Length: 236
Image (tube, rainbow, N blue to C red; front, side, top):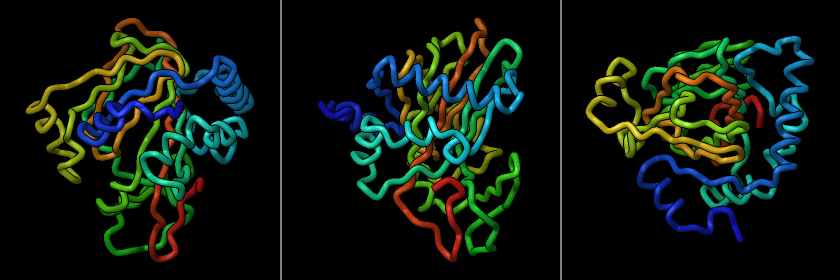
């Protein structure tokens, strides 16, 4: 049975801007992915680091996982066969790294090099990777998959959403908090192997954990559109 054969998941995603796919993977797949990421983290001599970027380029286990049947079924159901992975980020919220994330949208993309282009900017560099903010139509062709490697109950800093806020386009970051206060936050608890699907333009945040433990999440972004004017995705 296809991962997204349950129509309510597709309906939730299109209506709300997020949805949860309960663990479609085998225990072996999640164990292998976790070991690959932890091996990469140890090789960087950064065992306590709260996160990494560019794992699609630097970690073979993540690259292969992004090609798995379960992942491809999801992204092709949502974006078609031309969907490709374009960015990867690993987060780990622990007792040593327990942070609050304010309400925001994911407005930046990672690109190979800076080419000044109408509608793109401001530009920034994060961990050595060039980022820019593209127009709305680019962001609307991106989906994010957050794969949980640990159980994440509400108390462990679970992500929160304002349902339907992705339909409002790009919101001035200074207005994000007030827009969120006008809505009803929905916190998404997740189990090991669960996937939280989300649109970049949905307002989301996370609280500090009140029962801090590992909360390892692999964040994969997929795009079904090419960039203009010679711009290219960093990890595609």
